[in-house]
Amino acid sequence: MREELRAKIITVCDKKIAAKGENVGLSFYAFFANKNDDPALLMEAATWWIHTHKLDHFVKAKTIKKMILDGL
Image (cartoon, rainbow, N blue to C red; front, side, top):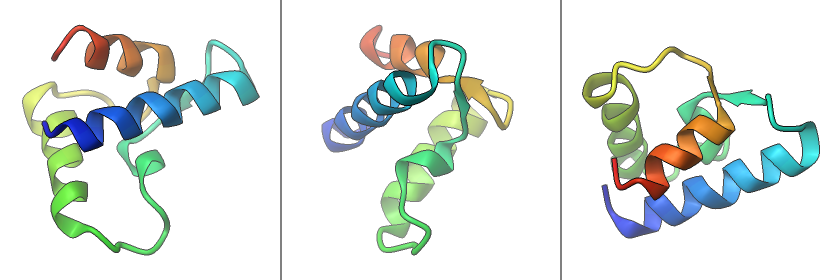
């Protein structure tokens, strides 16, 4: 996964946790605007989320952040 997407995921997770608490869940769509302005990046996130790690639709933001920080 490219560094740009990793940084974006960390930022979004931090914002969601700060706003809604440690148990907030999110999907990979949380990293993108409602308008699909970067389909390649969206597919990269979807592949990482669904195909590579077989995650559920909603996962705790703290779990996703830890996975990214661990280099997964």
